[in-house]
Image (tube, rainbow, N blue to C red; front, side, top):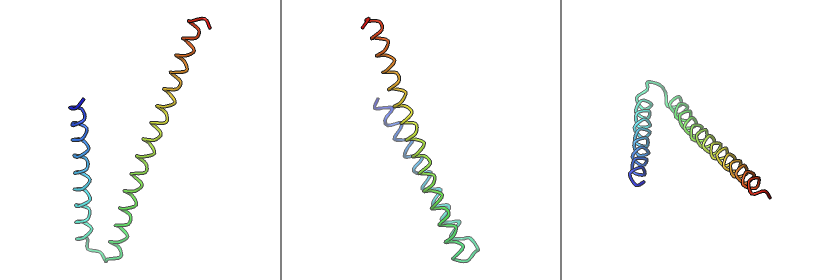
Length: 90
């Protein structure tokens, strides 16, 4: 169990490092882009809004998966209860 936890943490840290590197590279390319400052600001706002949207999409998909998992567990428990009541003859 501990090995799985460290493997998951390694995966999270690797992805975090990739995101930080990607943002640093994006900032560098934005800094050196041969356009005026207002265009750079517009691009920067677009990048920020895209990042926030991505976080929201991932969160809502995760919440939906959790909701569906809870519904499935409730259905399984209900079916198990019905089967046990039927077998016991109540």
